[in-house]
Length: 205
Image (cartoon, rainbow, N blue to C red; front, side, top):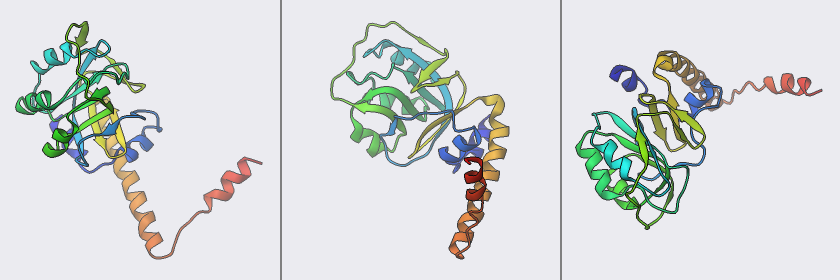
């Protein structure tokens, strides 16, 4: 599993999205830390709106390489994590956060270059009452994420890859990367094959 994760180093989310029929992943979550790529294994958390009790519970179970993937229903009224929870996650070996909700202490994530993707930012802190759940299927910005899915994030967003499809997706992504590299190389020599446009126009009648 770790070898597969490492194999995705440098593979962009746009490439992965293309070879997964452009269906998986997030649309509205933004990187809050800078440009470091996120690669890890999903530790999923479902929380009540504006409440982070079960994120604290999940932090007790973190294993090295985990990404805390938090389904907060997209609400941005309350920040669910901040600098202290960043520090705890990092101390316990987590490699990042994905939050379908809001965070605070953005400067700390940037300073530590600790990958964090979120929908929004607010200074207003969370409640700690529950309910919630850990290690269940969750919905992140419309994408269904299973515990243990491979999580990859970069400047363009976040994608989630089922473990059983990882090798297949990696192979397709490498082929796509080579194709795009060849295309860009050709453009650098003033060569670009856009003959596909005519075929597409013909289909349109």
